[in-house]
Length: 361
Image (cartoon, rainbow, N blue to C red; front, side):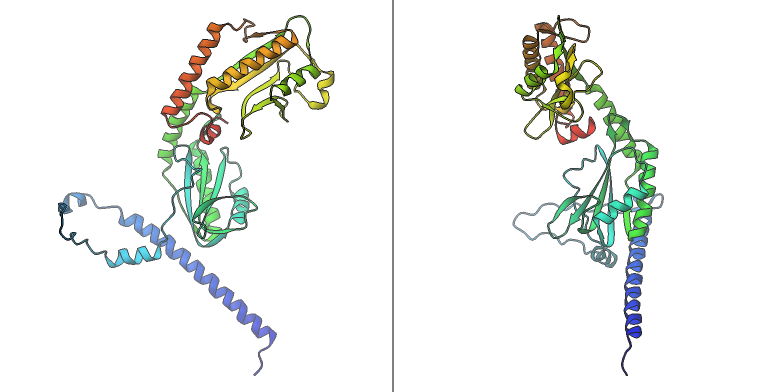
């Protein structure tokens, strides 16, 4: 008997349903197994005292190695059913990030996950980054709304500290709740770290950052006549500075990271199309100490540019109190930069490193 198109369609739909039910059952099984493992790890009171002490095995030279204990049937079953999670991405630092691993029963497209995050995690204050582990390349990929690859393992990293302060309990709770709703949609299982430990680390790291968060500023002010915008721009560009969209000239390194900035002392931003008619009574050069490597060298370059501008424009290099910068003041600033950047290095946060740029943003 011939099979009609309708019958073939029903057979295909039935196959899709079976696959969906199978995946859902696997997700439920994995979810329940994690819950049972958590319960099994809780021992009754006094169990530790009742446990027999492990026998000491002495090293044997030239003999056979002692026999290892055989795994139980449950250990074999669990090991075969569970994929071993890969290490964390190199871009993630557990001192500064609250990292949530996510295991998906079926591969999840990175772009779809990020698009769902925009809906379920709306309102997060701290930066959140996503990474997916490529089984074929054996590496973590940064993923975004347009990522097309699919992943069994994903991790979400919430930055715990920036210049606005440490993350709060509400921040972590919002992330945890949103991730759980997302994972339910994708039949995935999040492994949420303890919030209390993360909040304690965040508070300690924020105190450290606050203690070394300084900026050095010097002013070049006009003596008799204001600085013409055209001449100012020519001098700044000759010194290697570039006018960017934020209204300031930036001295950048080979990677494009700003070393120091030159901005208008008056409350007017610099704009390329308006420099010809601009006249200002002064400019400010600013060095953000935690965000640059070799801060003393950068400071000396900045002071050199300030003096060049003062000489060419008929100005003076002064501090915020309009007091001239002498060698004594310059020496004190050098010592401060060395001290604060040394404290950062002692804590494993290299000045100007990607981690420092995130923390001091």
